[in-house]
Length: 454
Ligand SMILES: Cc1cc2nc3c(=O)[nH]c(=O)nc-3n(C[C@H](O)[C@H](O)[C@H](O)COP(=O)(O)OP(=O)(O)OC[C@H]3O[C@@H](n4cnc5c(N)ncnc54)[C@H](O)[C@@H]3O)c2cc1C
Ligand SMILES: NC(=O)c1ccc[n+]([C@@H]2O[C@H](COP(=O)([O-])OP(=O)(O)OC[C@H]3O[C@@H](n4cnc5c(N)ncnc54)[C@H](OP(=O)(O)O)[C@@H]3O)[C@@H](O)[C@H]2O)c1
Image 1 (cartoon, helix red, strand yellow):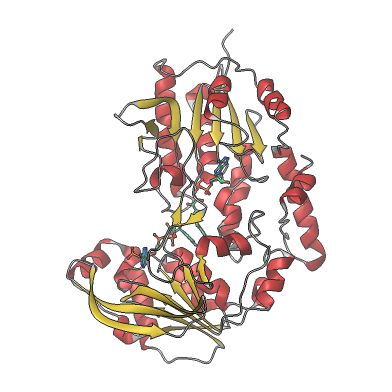
Image 2 (cartoon, protein in one colour; image 1 turned 180 degrees about the vertical axis):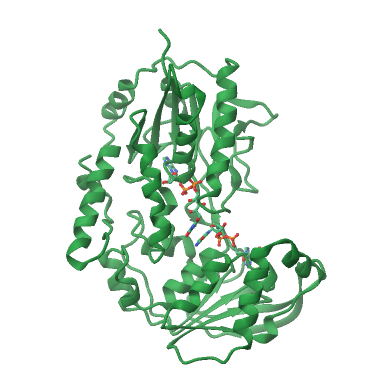
């Protein structure tokens, strides 16, 4: 009797959910069908949409509504609060499934190797985002006593960090932030936020809309120094080639020539300042030393030897995210990704690790928007189905779907389900309702499990 193609997807962020969607929309989904189990280490799905996207971006958080349609399908099950490498291993997955797709994304800060990075007050953007987004596995308090703050990097994460630091707690209250985060933000003393790019305006990685949004807060005065507006041939070529780069540069130019207003929180966007050292006294951050850079003709920069010491009491590193290495899978240390070809996991020597695939940030590295993970997932799933059609997938010993629940039960794993997500979702919405807020996040892992009925 033919049985459905059994696929495990590890990581229920956007990439994993789009991979499930691609499977459901494939020809293989018709007779004898596909059967998909998503394993997720958090009690709730949605990855960085829940634990990365800033709380004052409700429209983007709303992408989960579209993703619901995938998880609502009867061919898909969610096993939340299940950590690959702890609760379930590659051999276990092989015994239950024809194929395994890893979409474990990225959750940590990439290292920045400059002196002083270990000082108290040198902080990771990923850690801060996890805190304000109510991630259960990070401390509940955050020191916001610094009046002057530096943010290193000019990508969209740096913008998120700078904006959250420069907004008032009252501006953020209508969002889904949990009570401990609102309390923490009320104590925020930041009056000046300085964002530093080591290259120029044409090399900033901001999205135009996210950049312009900085100016929408009645509390934030965005300031750009006219001396920081500079382009070389490489920059001009990039502006011609890329409309987004041109829009970002134009916005920065406009801000550089306007009069500075009197909104209470100043947010400075500095360019051509490469972080050189975080300065400390008695183990605490007291400043940041940057080296002035200049364009070299190609859009890259070289140091000038001229340094500036900035008076700041906290330094946030927003220089990129980093994925966790996955047990039993090959690993590229330089890129922090699983080596692949078209989504097929590639072992040393170049052979395909049979029946094993990757998609999303764990495949491509931590760059790109939520929507970009869709094309990536389509490519990976197309190759998985090609291997299936060619009879190249391994045959599992125990393909019966009930075997997975029994296995997790025997291991004592308190797993959540898709029905459990609806219960948690309803509980969070109920918490928000008395205050007229769409939801208030539940933070503690046990409380999430209880609300999910795990
Ligand atoms: C701070 C921040 C803000 C962002 N804001 C936006 C935005 O506003 N708009 C936008 O378009 N893009 C935004 N992005 C980018 C977007 O979040 C990513 O493009 C997208 O989330 C990548 O999807 P992914 O599924 O590959 O990874 P992730 O979203 O990281 O999902 C991976 C999932 O795998 C799970 N997982 C990890 N390890 C294991 C394991 N061992 N076992 C089981 N499960 C595991 C994780 O818990 C997670 O749920 C933002 C990114 C960051 C860092
Ligand atoms: N609202 C949104 O749409 C949103 C929000 C957040 C994140 N995202 C997306 O998520 C992805 C990740 O964002 P991200 O901001 O983490 O990464 P990013 O876009 O790659 O930006 C990283 C920044 O860090 C700088 N940097 C790296 N190493 C450095 C060093 N040693 N010293 C100084 N600066 C250094 C980079 O400068 P160089 O260019 O000089 O290397 C760059 O400005 C992006 O695709 C982003 O668009 C989107």
